[in-house]
Image (cartoon, rainbow, N blue to C red; front, top):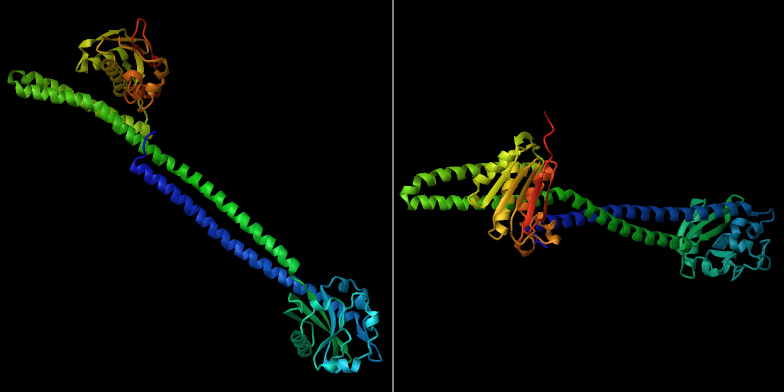
Amino acid sequence: MRSRTPAVARLHRARWAMTVLFAATTAVCLLVLATIAVRTDGQSRANDLDHDAVHRADGLARAVFYDAGGGLYLDPLQDDDLARGADALGVLQGPAEGAAQTGAAQTGPEQTGPEQTGPEQTGPEQTGHAQVSHAYTSPATLPDQANLDEIWQLVQHDQQTVQFTAQAVGGREFHWAAAPVWNGDRIGAAVLVGDDPAQSEAAHSRLLHWLALGCAALVLAAAAVGHLLSGRAMRPALRGLEQQEQFLAEAAHELRTPLATLRLVVETGSASPTRAPAALDEAVRLVDRLGRLVTGLLARARLEAGTQEIELTRLRLDQLVEATVEELPDHTGVTVTTEPAIVDGDPELLGQAVRNLVENALRYGGGTPVEVTVTAGRVAVRDHGPGVPTEDRERVFERRVTGAAGTGTGTGLAIVRWVAELHGGTARLSQAPGGGALAELLLPQHTGS
């Protein structure tokens, strides 16, 4: 596995940073929305409790009344559906009214039914405080004395149904509503209804639980999606870095041999004045070759980057191969057999492909003769070396792969196949009859007039 370059490592760090940023942004947005939802739900539930308590208190207050003798008629509190569904229910009376009504209510302790518990008949006049004269639920669900006095004062002051939130004697907090019952032109009593928020709070807690789980799941999903999208966004940059690295390796591979030959020619000409004219001519030829190599490298880089399209021209493949082999510094060990062959292609790219095939055979053929054959749409290069193992015959065409036993280079042969595929052909490697490797460049034949 190749180690990451600093540029690639920076891109990967940027990808993780974008993932974290995407997840954090999503988390903040979800937190804001969840907070709004929780507050809205809490307020809605509290309003529902208050509305329910007020509705029950108003309905029951209209059902009870004072008769002509001043007695408080309370029978509807036992039979009304509003009364049976209340969490806390009682009749609140003040000290003065309690003194006047003691024993006067038509529903006494023995008439309030089995739900009536506690000291519902305690006379308010005995304490000087507002009291629940008739309790229809457990006394533990009713407010304590201080809250009873405050509720009574609110009813007397507002002279309408009032709302109040206070703890019951048992310690639980209820939502209360007290609706006045008029005795002539004054308030004689108040129907007190309380709603226990326990069930609503449990539902609210379940909402919080599911919101937390849902937000966590969405943040994880957002992180995964952000990581995927950032990876897709960075693929072109990673591909560009890889192509740049490949181009540098291929450029070094293409230029190393002619530069070394040029240096040797210049040193030879400098050391021997008699050979200087020939060395100068050879240096000029090598410089021309380097110019063509650079042009081909730039064209290949632009083609791979997608900034330029290949320009195909009609050419003689046999003549191109002969000229390419002639330019090689050690072409004396290469024999070329050709027949006229016309193809449509880029001469610089095809020249590089042929050059790489021949140089690969010279380098890894063990010093044996190299034979180049050109037929219609085919360039075959054979050496008499150890050959290429079957399992390596495809791998050597991959970039940066070296075949077994030192056969093939992952740069030179990869360029050959790339050029062949660019022209609609292919490149392959096989065992030559009698031993050695046979490399072939196959191209579509010219079909024009």
